[in-house]
Amino acid sequence: MAPPRNEEVARRSRDGGVAHGEAPGRVKHRTVGAPAATVAAARALRGSMTLPEVLLWQALRQNPCGFRFRRQHPVGRFVADFACVRARLAIEIDGRAHTMGDRPERDVARDAVISAAGFETLRVNAEAVLRDVDAAVATVVAACQRRVARRAAPPSALRAATSPFRGGAGAADITQADPPSLSGEERHD
Image (cartoon, rainbow, N blue to C red):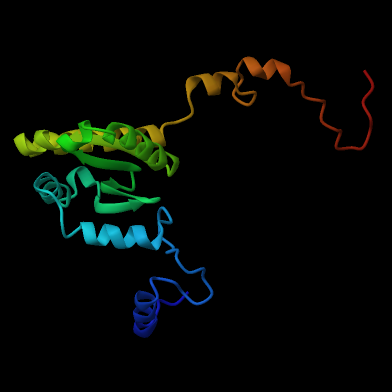
């Protein structure tokens, strides 16, 4: 498929990212299929980041330990402060407001939606970022490493032990019939 020409890119920008024949109001996003309004909100939020977000972004954009991060990344109908798509990790910077009123309940509901999109949410305290950015980065990188290792891990020992194809306990349940003779003769025992 050929890349879009400049006029096609310009038309998609004017039309909210909708190509000819696509349903309006949705942008086909590479990773999560976020609504056009969420993508627009994410773009706007990139220009109004808080100080802890800016400090953490300055460190994360250096790709620590080879992990690439996105800032203000749309996940479903929400925008995560940061995301590592490879590790499927959404990073949220929580200030004091996240402990007041109904915010804790709203954060739980938000985390459930983000989890349904295949991402795990890591919440980092904004004051911790202000105190020690390097420690916050180390926490984020460690979470990414755990997620990548968990996703790439071989099947569990339990699954291997009970698999009929691995000689485990389940193997006795499957009886293998004698293979048919290649000469066409039937075997009578």
